[in-house]
Amino acid sequence: MDPNSLTFIFLNAALINNFVLALFLGLCPFLGVSAKRETAWNMGLATMFVMLVSSVSAYAINWMLTELEIEFLRLICYIAVIASAVQLVEMTVKKFSPALFRALGIFLPLITTNCAILGLALFQTFREYDFLQSLAFSLGAGAGFTLALMLMAGLREKLELARVPSVSRGAAMSLMLAGLLSLAFMGFAGLGGSHA
Amino acid sequence: MSALPNREEKITLDTFLRGLWEENPVFVMLLGLCPVLAVTNSTMNAIAMGLATTFVLVASSTLVSLLRRVIPKQVRIATYIIIIATFVTIVDYVIQAISLDLYNALGAFIQLIVANCVILGRAEAYASKQRVGASVVNALGMGAGFTVALLCLGTVRELLGAGTILGFQIFSANFEPWVVMILPPGGFFVLGAWLLLFEYLKQRKERKLLDSEGAIS
Image (cartoon, each protein chain N blue to C red):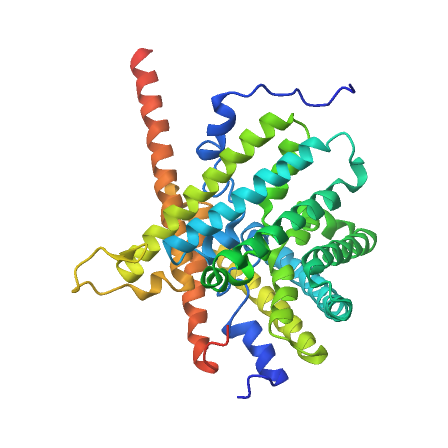
């Protein structure tokens, strides 16, 4: 497959180099909000939306900064844009679904410090994607994040019913599960080589 | 001097040691896991990342603590983020100037220090309420704890995955490297194993305490 085609960029971000399981981006919500499938799904959607907004804004900002030759301000501008986008999502969710707002709790404002989103903006700049490629990249990353979160939530719901040694309850078990999931996702590497 | 909601703390040895053990950011609080897992495929990367994070942590804690009476409460998070982003930009350019190889190995993860929740957490929970001295000592402790955690993962992964530590051969040539340890799943497994070990030690200590209490009564 052509590494610059939109399909490849989407699949690459969603499966081959999954943001959570291969690049270790966005682990805090991955371990924090993956206890129930419904919360995980909504968190995935919220993150995906913030990713889309940040990706488009990052593209515009990068173009502007390059024109003015002040690229060293890139990081500060990106993080400011992401923080505003998160604020927007937070207000929307609070207005339309107070129950969801309570369920997501502290993890909603924490999307700001979700490295998956800043990582997305930085990667698309490093790889010099054009506008459509950036869109495909952010959609793929969001889909991959939601997929990983949902898989994890499904596994953890089942584990609630299992008898595990008391030592391995909690974070240690989640990390082992994530390791197994990550091992499974390595199989997707066959789809198109590593294009990290 | 306006009254602050929290009591200001005296600097003791505990201010520093807390970050290393009791409140270790990685093993106890599970914060900042992304860089911990992503760059620990070799010991060298782990050390560089630990030092870079410690620098940003100490510098931003100092500035936040100095400005704690100036920053309006409503926009404090945004202010902290801007302060942190400034120092990360400095670190980014410094590492680029010192070693280009290291810069390429760490990749985007240097700039991603901005999104490390350990730093924002310290700014919000400690530096914004305490004097400069205490904040610096506390930040140093947290930074040291973070670096130690990175080292714990980095050495184990490099040793098992390549049979070396800092590039020196440890095992004989017959050793078959566990390549999976250097790949992403290895990061999850090694951190999981460390957490299992600490949980086991904790439970054993509690059991011993319970036994000795039973003996007295």
